[in-house]
Image (cartoon, rainbow, N blue to C red; front, side, top):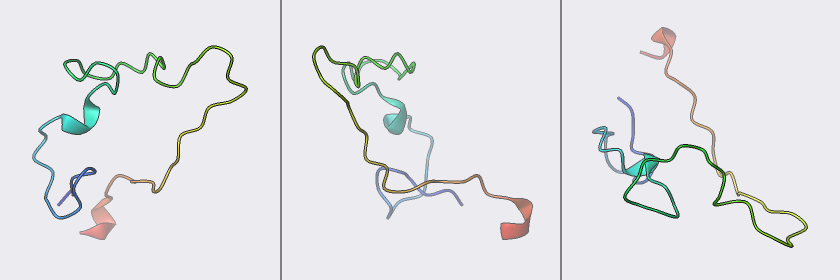
Length: 60
């Protein structure tokens, strides 16, 4: 079973909360990148604390 990416203690129920836009929570993220672009910044970074790979048939 797939776990929720926002709450490790719960099973994913496809609520869509993890797909919300950080700048406008009323819309789904469309990868516009406005959340990481800023004027005058030399660089921007996003911390990646894990990678979730799709489950394969051999994992079952």
